Length: 167
Image (cartoon, rainbow, N blue to C red; front, top):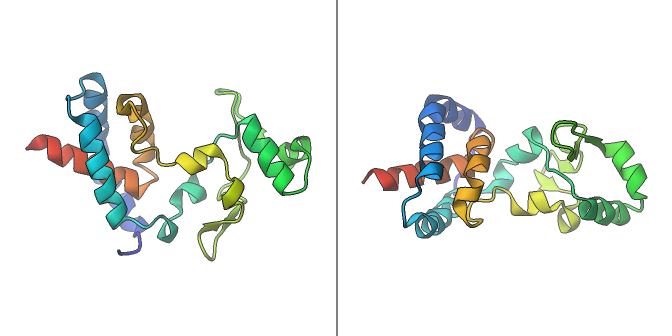
């Protein structure tokens, strides 16, 4: 398994974003019958090729949304009150009303190792990322449309499904 090359990912995304986003929308609106089965198969192929720890681009460029349960759990782990945790690390997104990281990269990412320093108690959003095989897949297509820009695994997943559906 090769380390993720983020420059190559960015170039690939730029070259294919219109085609793939259009494909995602088309698939979301008119899903083929075998999409769930196909996504499970392509998910396995993706993880045979992608090593998240060699990348951590999600932690570097995105923010998870924090549920109240996440905030309570992480604050307790850090020996803080939820109120203090929110004041120190988070802001409330006015548009979506979500709790998000104030900074990027994520304050809990160890930049030397690309590992999460609170992995055992990380937000549910992080634990489920990149949400490739959540079902029904059509409910997550809009997420893939966003994530292909940041996540090489999501981009590869969408490319593999695209290729499979062309044959």
